[in-house]
Image 1 (cartoon, helix red, strand yellow):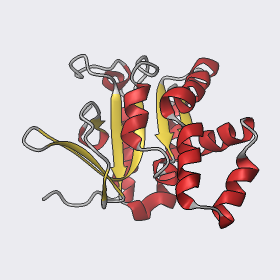
Image 2 (image 1 turned 60 degrees about the vertical axis):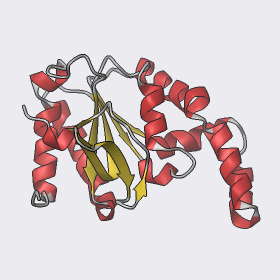
Image 3 (image 1 turned 180 degrees about the horizontal axis):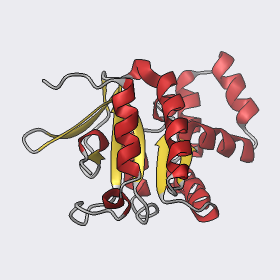
Length: 200
């Protein structure tokens, strides 16, 4: 059993990885998509946001530009653009939860709406690395493996790091799984690398 990594160790490891030439040149991936999962304990949600901002700032001092995308914020933007954000608030307050879930899953469908929104951000902003956060906030309307599956054709030029509140295990014997909040088994996803295991 590996000993838990401290906040400072995680921050320094992620910074060292994302600014390394090996990572930026996508070396050692065996022609796989350059997707990485940075898993963390769900209770670290607030500190991981601070640390992510710190990494973005410090990486820029090393000449590495990180495009920091929050999936929750992108979803809110989509709801505003479609003119239904107020309706969602009303449904959430006193509507049927299953109807709300169905509405949000349709309006925020990854392949139809969310990935094109991400693609717009990628085309509009210079970047060497992409950070994705807000995974826990968009559950259960959008599942992380759906985002990653649909993103494969859009974000393959730059390494992409998804910050994941839970655990990502990737082993030959058991396969790979994303376990959201350490409780919810978020289906199999095989194509990402665990950032915390990445060596520079």
